[in-house]
Length: 414
Ligand SMILES: [Zn+2]
Figure 1: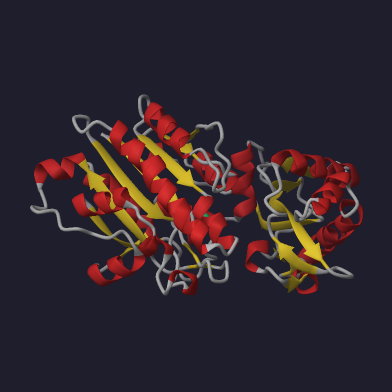
Figure 2: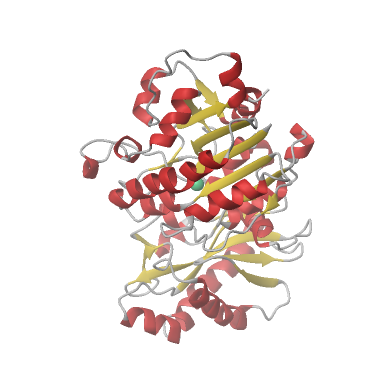
């Protein structure tokens, strides 16, 4: 049995004015998602427990069968694994964005992604950051994809007792109120040190040639660093340990690859996978099929719907869902031969509201189809199921807990 898990990041949404009161999933044409739901089973799954932050890391820990309340130590260490940076038990890791700030003094946070700055430009800016801050021996910066980088504070002298602000949740907000705060006395020195770096970075980044060129061509500059999502190394059981399956992950984003590494998946890089709407959908399908030749399980993650939501672009989000359906799921289903047993699940990780860019804890759609299921108990006429929040809300009696969805997925293939 081969297992394929396809996740559209932040694909679930709310009714949007821009779409005449419909959600992007209701608006988009996605015949392949509907086919999986109609031939198999579908419903809603709550990947984010009520007491957790509705981030990708929390949702994915649930999807892999873990309780994020127990295993999640923060986003930074998961990103570190995604980039391939080893952490000691004492080290503190933080995700570090380049963001765009405008206005006088510390300014207002305009863009969490510095205009989706290219990796080349972003690495150039990170070199300047390294030059300024990496002199103490315990502070290290590592480049990731586009605006996403990593900050590692080595050794036991830094405290995780701090509160940081995920920048995508605080657009158009004055920086002043978003700076790092101590959550306990021992966090104060670490908070002060980080704030000094954040505010100091504006001074040398604003006039960096890369940023001057970006401003000149009408693009948002990466004129401030923004560390957040701090944490120490977690301890997480692998997929092989919990299910016996040998798996791989295909994703353009470090956070998903990082969780993939923690759960023991091989990381498969696809050329042209960007984490944005211009990603290589066909390439992902192609590589997923190849990966299944020597793996039992493959995760295919598409970041584009989430980014379209954060850009506030409902039309673009609809397009990313349609592209995912036609250009990724289409060739994937075609390539999976019916005579070879497989089970496929398509789902969102969390809701991202295009109306305001916020993530929410609300349940999200999932659909599972297995060749096994068809052979053992056919659903007769195969009633037409729409793969969207509204249809599934009306038609499903119960919502699955996130940490139980992997079990449900694997059971369909038995
Ligand atoms: Zn996500």
